Amino acid sequence: RCLGPDYEVINAGVPGYSSLQGLRFYDSKIKELKPDIVVAMFGWNDHWPAMGFTDSEQTGNSPSVDVEENPLIDLRLYQVVLWVVLKVTGPGTMEGPLKYRVSVEEYRRNLIALADIVGKTGARTILVTAPSALAMGEIPRNLYKKRFVKRDRGDSEAEAAARLKKLHGQYTDVVRMIGSSPGRAVLVDMEKQWDARGVEDLFNSPEDDVVHPNDTEYPPNAQTLCDTNRQIAFERNNK
Image (tube, rainbow, N blue to C red):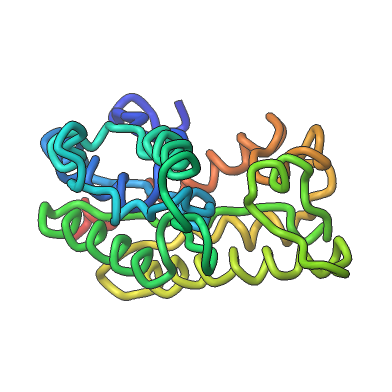
């Protein structure tokens, strides 16, 4: 409604997808729809701890699950199954340094690849930083339960939150770098906007979730994206 009747918006977002899945989903399914503008926001799912294997390690390695041919496969479910199997049969596979679904470097490559593929069609990419309320200094209980963050012995809540905020910041900085590259993508720094407005009232249950905001935050987010889309459309029409 914000953009008006001349625009068609296709909601192609998939909960739980990483940047790798999003890249392959666009290349195999969305590209054929010939969008003029692609809005992409990744981050949290990318630095979620991998359950045994990273997203790229799983891709195409199973004769019965061909992710290359079916990018809609839920790799997170696949990870859970692998984790259960490895716990039963695999010696030591779950030990060692913590790995994330998509590393920072892989994240950078995925976003660059997405922006470049979109650009080759003549379309523009809007990259959105993934906001949070980590600035509040608390980590929701569910992130502990899901092994998203691990408190070392003797750590305070604030110290554990600071480590998670630093990790999330590394992925956010990648978005800012690529989104600020002239001619490659357009940046919408949603996290910066959240921090400027204050995040205390944006979550119904911050003790459980500081990633998904309540309904009060969706209208300003939508307005920001609407204004950015309009600016891109205006520039395209006045070349």
